[in-house]
Length: 197
Image (cartoon, rainbow, N blue to C red; front, side):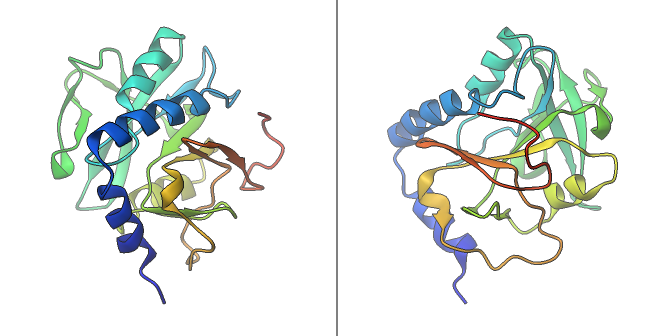
């Protein structure tokens, strides 16, 4: 069996900084084609790290449009995520797990998973059946599997991270959509018909 995670991450890490910026801008434009990412909604993003699709511009645009921006705090011991509301992207963050920017608990308020309308997910590899491989910790899969999380699940990645079919396991949570620099892919996911693009 191919190691899709390592293979796709190696390909992504091979992108130049200029390519990451250019492709991230295109992916961000496509992300806002999803009608659920709209004023008044609450969207949980991820804080981009290394060669991931850059999300800080997307979060800035979201806040300018009246979208409430949430970022997760990682608990590496229990492998869980706690979402917190971000009011100021420059002041409310600090280095957290793996030096990834996370909400400062002293400056931000915790948000219930049930309040979140959309979760934007990073990943190492994706397929066009709504499959997603994370980085091996299962943080997002646990969060999405919780009974009170009914958010739309939107993967965000580069086209080169897509493979024909991922060898998924029972705990791997399906996506409703995948956004790349080339467009938006819609899947049956867990909320089929819940939105249109």
